[in-house]
Length: 359
Figure 1: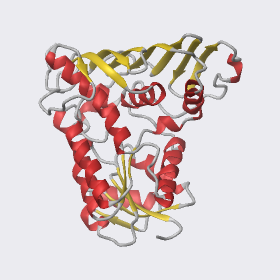
Figure 2 (figure 1 turned 180 degrees about the vertical axis):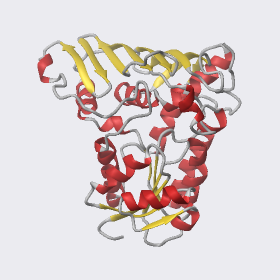
Figure 3 (figure 1 turned 90 degrees about the vertical axis):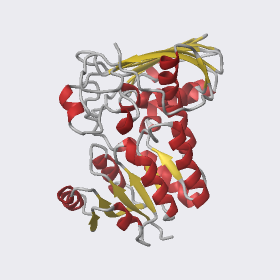
């Protein structure tokens, strides 16, 4: 393997520029090829990011011997086949969130990468924020004492035009869900990363203000973590005008609250709040009212970790199992909502769950 890890990228949609821009800023990475089914998109994307080759068929791209790793940046329903094909071609794979549309698909992806001996990562870039690492360190050190409760909120708004922008949007087959799996998923993942595994959960979901979609635009859940803390979640793409996502963590010795990329409260015994509050606000784009995340720094950090995982022959910080854990939490909400009862982890996955649309 050359000193640089040579990447191919599949998909020029919203997250394509985030991956390409991040890789461009990593000295150990080189993007040698790009693929999109639309030739005009493939050509213009390759020109913008100075990528020497472009394709309209990803199988032609991954057949190249000079590609070490591939970023799969396509709609969720395409993830499984593309990741499996990349693995069989001997390519390490970084897949955008969510890992897949259901846990069975995720298991097949993880198994294919393991069998092929390639590294498999899933993009959850919020874990790599300085603020997330500060909170994680405090929790791991027990600075909050025994955790009591955790609240996670993702009250966004998406227009009908947003859902109409792709035939796969707002469908169970195309996305695997709605607000939970597309908008709130990053903060669900951050919550699970910070606080730990969930033991049991009761959830509900419904479609309200978007008549042309199949999936949830409002969902909620109450749950118990394995460490004993109680949790609550609200997720939506129907709340006007849309609000920043946040997580509040309450323990015996105080409270920490993060809103998007800012720590806004750190009231913990024996700790000086001013040392932890975010002083410089990040301008990463609007995620409350539109699909507008634009900052590449956290993608750069995650992709750097992925490159080091390849070189050091270790698992990346967010591997397939971590990606599946976040998906399983979401699938549990759909399952609980359909069954009308509490579910326990690990769930017994069944693709039939997550089809309800009544309000």
